[in-house]
Length: 102
Image 1 (cartoon, one colour):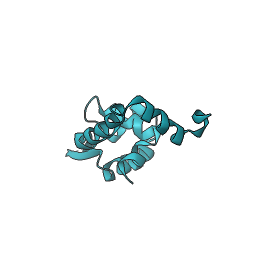
Image 2 (image 1 turned 180 degrees about the vertical axis):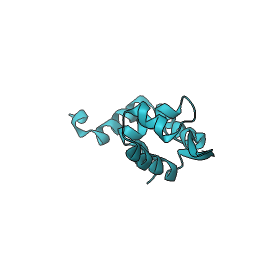
Image 3 (image 1 turned 120 degrees about the vertical axis):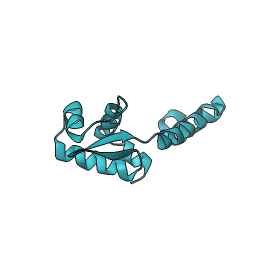
Image 4 (image 1 turned 90 degrees about the horizontal axis):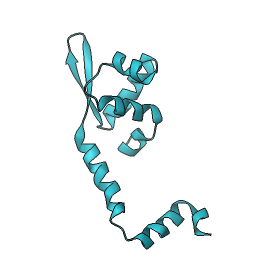
């Protein structure tokens, strides 16, 4: 799954938000997001495969943390739209949501 598909899921976004506070174990994340541990593990696998998180051994457990590079790339992609002249953004909005062109 690519970066955009990985962040499309609300549970994965909550996991990423929890990891903004620092590294955490899967059990810490499960408690934080209010989701069962096997489900959080599946979401973490998707986030790892997309390159958004990494795991480090910590005794018997793994600590998960964010990988910043994909977020920097995402930030650049989003900010490119902010540099587009307003009229062009209105046309883009019409393509994305044709109801706005009425």
